[in-house]
Length: 616
Image 1 (cartoon, rainbow, N blue to C red):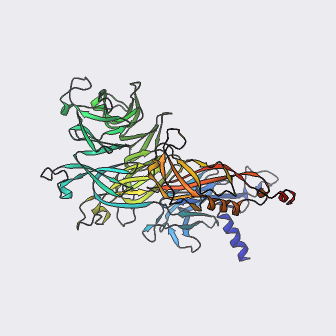
Image 2: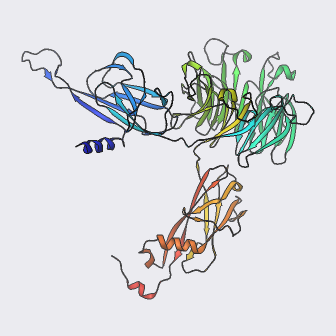
Image 3: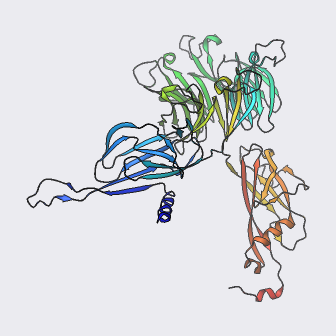
């Protein structure tokens, strides 16, 4: 009997929901009738469930109690459930319940969001299975699992601030005073120097150029001082455009550098309003050397494609941009470079960042500051209600840093205090929040890399081993690596299984944004088991003449034939010709995986008598 009950409970873990239908005493329904037959049997129907069955470590978990019956349900205490480890059933959360009498009306539900913090140990939960059980005697339960995040935190040990990442390059600036080193060889230690770290080679490169707040796109790092400057990673050349910007954060996409210029420093009235009190958005084209003044009052410029997003102080613009009756706010706007049109989102916010159609920023609401985003394609505005600062968006992910002391956020990294800034991210597509649980500020994201700076004193560690904890150190997180769909072409297109040839050749192309030179050839496998022939030539060229670079590798033909014979259906062996799909997998140097397949014909020479053999 016990085994049967256990099997039933285990089966319910697949759906994570157990529905209770509990009979209660008959109740009086409706008005009195002379026949006295106005008693009916009713039921309470409740569902306890989680929004998913499996969660990544650090991801918020939504727990919902629903009343799907026809009776109002009285509840004593909040929350009306407790979380335990499974199957050990050690209590996890909460440690203390609120004494509260409340009701769930028919059709109503109550949802509680849990951040995976263990009230009993004072630390975040570990990966494993968990069960939620009600505390009201309803015999409700729901099961879920927490799995490892697959995030690797890497410490470069390099002193730096305001990192930005693109590809395998993290760029930042370093204060010579903190480094106690003359990084540009000018005989003193009073400068801020642009440097960058190569993730693939794990090497630090010093540009020796003075500047701060860098931004990066492909092989160009742009930054400011009093003027807009940029550094070419390929040629290792430095250009000072001479265009006044004055200590602000630029942004780059393609050949366009967008930035604000402060009129007081430029000594010009850039927007023609008769004063020199404003900051005005301008942009510079590296290819043509052309400087364009948009005349838009703004700061915090961010560019993607043809769009420059920025924030505007209403008092500088002299307009109530969000329609709240005052000119005290900072409002998000954006400019289309091609059309010259400026759009007012009417959303209060600052430090916008743009990728695709999404403009992410931090916004001040009446009782909290939250990560918010605006969708250019449909004009929608979303308040995530998640406390965060310094947002950076890439595809569907908005990464940011949250101060634990803010609005009762709590101990997000489990170190026993609420004094830190912790890196988290929000997935727009799934509407989920993931807590990396790591101390850091100024996060930047590109693909599966999140770069950030960590103040050693907040982390409680000497991250660069210099004997103190006074530095800001560049670190980065590698998220679960995305799998890239590669284009694969295999030759010969018809493989004779009795062939004495030496190799089977595969050419591999990667989609835009991925460098074929970054493929780690030693990780390449055919159908998950056959490595490349390391003695054969490995070349980068244009194997199929489509103007896209590809990597050509070779596999030992005998090994592939052996694999085919061992895995092909015996009925296929009776055919002279059949096809087989061969799949190539591998990794880039940063750990990103790729996969691509091609179908070839195989020729199976058979003795004449084989045609008379039949299998049923």
